[in-house]
Length: 255
Ligand code: F6R
Image 1 (cartoon, rainbow, N blue to C red):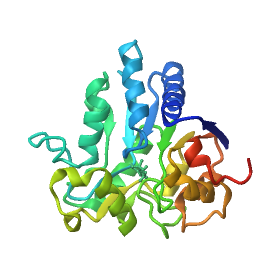
Image 2 (cartoon, rainbow, N blue to C red):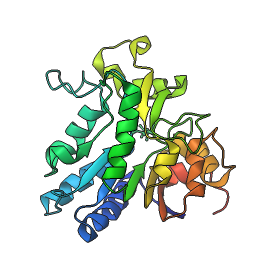
Image 3 (cartoon, rainbow, N blue to C red):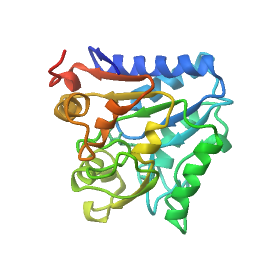
């Protein structure tokens, strides 16, 4: 695991975008695993800027980590009202680059049979030849994707009940804009499992800000445990790059 500490969130975003762009240039039909949330926003902005300078996404295939059950892209509503991760990705990245719609994969939170959707998602990843680079954030519960504490480290794509802490964070960051009351937030999601994530050929984990410091230190330096699913990064066999700003790196002991 290669831990890189940058001076600011902006530098983390630039480095994450450079890392991703290097793969895209080397392998123009790469399969990227993508994340949502506040952390990757700067990275996506940088990738959009690079696309403006010629970075080509026309053969890139993507798989997102997760989606809320009951949610899917609703273009009839303004972005602020549609809190699906599909809409987030559309607004924050996909509509600004030359990616093909058919190459974009996000778990369908509107599927009639969410369990079958989980199986279908696993099959799609396999059929695409697996993920070359998985981008990851870390939640304050230590989750990777929506793998909340207690999720087995060999889990596959599954239905996940979200913790109160995760719901509070996502309400504060995003859902409050939709006009929904906190109590009305979706509490279930479809998420790639930890085992699914560990099958990617490389990982790029990013964390920024002091509020992520203690959980980041526990994930990178503490016990490997299903109580903190991002600790599975220590099990990863391939190349894993961890990009932190000074705030998120604040509690690391071994540096
Ligand atoms: C999102 C995801 C989550 C987030 C995590 C951090 O697709 O998989 O694991 O990466 O909740 O969220 P932010 O970046 O909003 O702090």
